[in-house]
Amino acid sequence: MSENNRKGVLLVVSGFSGAGKGTVMKRLLEKYDSYALSISMTTRAPRQGEENGREYFFVDMETFEQKIKEKKVIEYARYCDNYYGTPREYVEEQLGKGKDVILEIELQGALQVKELFPDSVLLFIMPPSAAELYHRLVSRGTETEEVIRKRMRRAVEEAQDIEKYDYIVINDDLDTCVMHLHEIVESVHEEARRNRETIDRIRKELQELLKGE
Image (tube, one colour):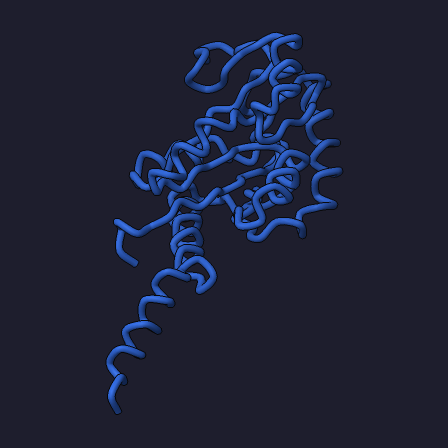
């Protein structure tokens, strides 16, 4: 497909907390220029080193709930007592430019997006094992054992709905995971249903060539 005719695909990426989806997305954006990462809005407090407008748009509860009423978020979910949501304007702008827009969101929000945007592609990033997931959470060194256990219990719940996603990607080796994810997205672009203009053009050209026979 010609890059000039390439239409952006809305990619919804989820995964257990600690599966490394943030690291995968960062490497994907570094390696390929065809992606745009949607910056989510949240009511949780910034972690050390995070900046407003870079990792997240940090807002208070009142502001977030007002934006919900104004329908300025594509989806939102409440997770561990905080809201997370996707601003609509940025996503639509980037898709229009032909960028593949990545929404890094939780399962509840992912299913909301799929309902609103049936052509979106849902990807779930998984660790190679449950033991590795626990090890990664502990290794971050940013949370108490109580919070880690809470995240593991949440992972048990999320695991019940993984089949609702279109693809799973195992994050064992980072570079392999990133390459596999990119290959999936490239194959999505080649789906016949996403290339109706090309199909219609070829049909028209065939008909023109056969005129007069």
